[in-house]
Image (cartoon, rainbow over all chains, first blue to last red; front, side, top):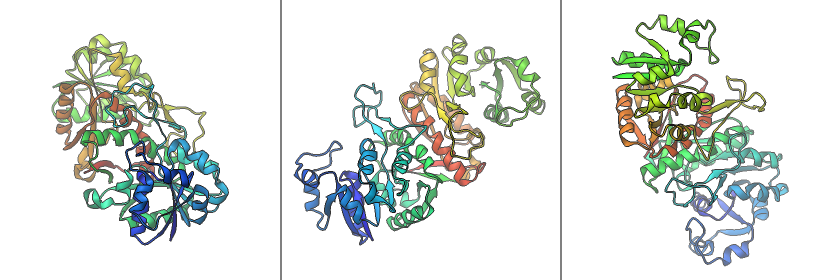
Amino acid sequence: MKIAVLGTGGGARAHIARLHELGHEVVVGTRDPQATLARTEPDMMGNPPFGQWVADHPGVELRTFGDAAAEGELVISGIDGINAVAALTAIADRLAGKTLVDYAVPFVYNPDIEHPWPTPWGVMPTFDPCDSDSLGEQIQRALPDTKVVKGFVTQEQTTVVDPQAVAGGDHTMFIAGDHADAKQAVTALLRSYGWTDILDLGGIVSARGMEMYAHLHSAIGFALGFGSPFGIKVMR
Amino acid sequence: MKIAVLGTGGGARAHIARLHELGHEVVVGTRDPQATLARTEPDMMGNPPFGQWVADHPGVELRTFGDAAAEGELVISGIDGINAVAALTAIADRLAGKTLVDYAVPFVYNPDIEHPWPTPWGVMPTFDPCDSDSLGEQIQRALPDTKVVKGFVTQEQTTVVDPQAVAGGDHTMFIAGDHADAKQAVTALLRSYGWTDILDLGGIVSARGMEMYAHLHSAIGFALGFGSPFGIKVMR
């Protein structure tokens, strides 16, 4: 399948590499391909410059967001929460009729918010939107002709593409969206990644709970020791 | 041990019955004992009137919040989120020096918020406080001389008092608080309930993630079928 990955951060790279491994054609979207390739500094999460990463991953094609989206049969958006709605709205016509997976946590890193937690980011992130709305819902409203699926958001993306790395794969992936066929396509991709326990949480409104879980995810991560891979499993 | 349970709703009743079973002395607090016993209608969650329940549970002593708190060596607060800070602040002197477990989700049931989810409550609850504060932190700030532990909040209380009812007890309980000795006391109580996997999430600030998980908890509950008992387990 030809899959578009929008974004060049650590999460996007995890998907790109794994999709290649699974034999998919991958086209990568970024705001400005020349600028992305020209960067020489690590990004805010400490990932090496994308141009350097690409040199080690032959076959990765870099396009604008719109050109990549137009080429993908399935689109995975790794655009960060702050920029996602504007960036995707600008290419709405290229996304019409397609399935788009959004995995962003709509975190805002506000240096003015006092933070009692020793986060690796130094500040305590908060959510925008939060509680009575979600990024998943905002994207679906902004792209009424696109089938938006919220998924991959309750794990690190390195875990999403390699679930077996945690507890032999015995943990739960959540998805939500208003379009059953789109959720089926995403479920098929997840099974190819190795997921066996995929729980459909219904409509895109469930993106609220999936996104807001991020604070508990962070707290569990700090308790276990930052960097320890883990997952949560729904025990019935 | 003499344990005070503040509140007379379904969650409080689950703790009262289980604590009796374990041989503890239990004293129950309510705003107005006469009014509570005089009620003849089910509460908003459909629980039968407390007076009727008490008739089937001999040995339950009903007091005001303050009198119950003063008698308990350990205090479990089942006061709902909307009322908890005011009700507990009013009896701060009776709670000084004690360990208090708060398990409330600070849900607000606002009938004006359009709700696409088929909740049993008819409306979509939202959180107050949310994201940059939590009920657990508010209670700790309001009661600086009390050792507040947030716990029991990521499960139904019927599951909290009987973890073996889900997956043979193989799921995770979270606690958070600023006082290590208080968390030890709560951990001992949880072990007597049957919990084996108890994860300490650090300071009371982690109450944010624990409370905000409630939306995901609801979504999982709806997906599995409302009323199906479940738990989440942190898989390492």
